[in-house]
Image (cartoon, rainbow, N blue to C red; front, side):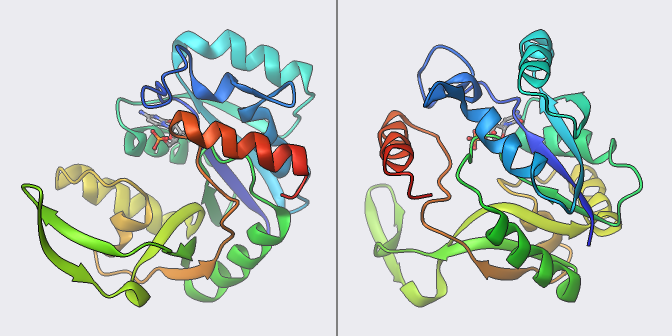
Length: 227
Ligand code: C5P
């Protein structure tokens, strides 16, 4: 099944503290965003990449797309203040595709086999996300005081990509805007309107580069070529 993918890359990367958009940090002399885009560029079922960017960085992104000959990038769309708005802007640029994937630009270790597993579930269920079981004990906390301990078996760390029927995810985004709801992922927008989202086992290596220690882990993955 063919799909288009929205890659939000318009964040400021404040938590990384690199003084620039973390998408441009190099791993093995290749920017993070290029590692990510190349996976979709080389995935047969991907018919188009919609890259969501900060307008001030358009020239840099354009230069990278040309330099790395990324022919599947069909649109460079302006991002919003929050990730959710960036994805919504990307959704409006999807054309001629029944299914859409949303994948963070800052997750460069995604693989074809994980994408295939996700797509297979999305075809059956209409909406699916990669996720991994949490390894730590998770507690709910208020004012530095433990409220309760959440049963670990029921808690998963949610990753991207997430895969959706385009009509469903656009509707969910529109209803979220109407309801002033802001989620940290796209699946949550479907959940709040009662649409089921299936979990597909991801990979612990599919990390999102968020804080400086994530870069150390990413460098280790690259050096061991174990992703
Ligand atoms: O900030 P965080 O790492 O959770 O962002 C996840 C992804 O969403 C990143 O690739 C980031 O560039 C993107 N993003 C965006 N627009 C925003 C905020 C984040 O495209 N306003």
